[in-house]
Length: 481
Image (cartoon, rainbow, N blue to C red):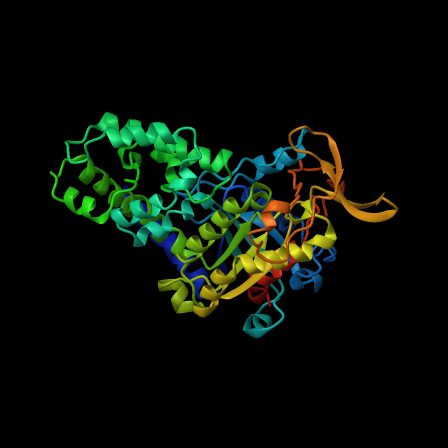
């Protein structure tokens, strides 16, 4: 009897979810980006602006979001999320980090999470406007680690192809102080011999340190398998005892195919396919393929600071991710049975870290950076937009005199030292940097701490932003007419 009640309850929830999507009253927005792009801060800033919007807000905080500007927005509130198996996005903890002395940025995304908002508004067009003075759009915001996206290309690769691809990145892996130990231990293993679980784990631990070094210390992005960076619930499981076989040619792989089923080689090969089928594919099928709209946050400044190789690596990682997206214009039937991303926004984040006269350059650079990915999405029928934004503004702009000339600067609190800083961070290139550009670049993009700019009135948004209203209009405007 209890199991029948549970089944009926689950059926009721599924029916409700289907009904919302059938009437176009539900939208699933995915937020992602590579490490350091500011995903958690973006969601926190976006939700904060929405929760403080409504008829009491004249639209001054969000002038480009038409439903607010036209005073048709009754308000936004948090609602119970539909999927009880996904952790909730911890909005309250994020707000506490941003508002409690000393202010700090919210903890980075380490697992998938979800938050649902109910947006109540007055329809102005169509059948809804004739039938009712209010309607509600349920917005599900899904946050997930950008690192997990880097595994999606593995869906199309064999173990041999994946190993060969990692071999092309050996010059990057070698930068880690742990690479030599990893390489020596890997070389010492007889791949055709019977596998030893302890040895597999020891080599994996070294490879994990190599990946962590490359990402955290050297500023690279393309690390696979990504769950070695953020294992989550898979910490310590055999499916993560996995690493590529570097520098093996096709003849070596063919010879290893003849080894015993319990050999190191076949054990690694089996674990690769288990990882793809049990970790990568479920993530794609259960979450990724069900998104309606996607925003990809891009931190252009950190790789510009670090150098050419890191910048090129970010570009390659972004394209690898976008190739895995499921694009196409949505219809109601498609959204129920074969959902596709019909709007894609690439947003250069942290644009408040540069002077206002450089923000146009940031947008131009981002447009060229993702040009190949943008063409792919448009070819599949997806509407694509690029923007330069800041979800939570942490600096102020000013002018200083230098050698008799006034130059624009940014002012803020440096994140690590917690000291006030006034600087001109440098000129952002308008186009993809050429080979000789890196020899003479002189950037000083630094990380700023959140500033205490909260308003006393709860009828207005707590945080200043740059172009979040533009973001909202692009992603939600067509659903709130």
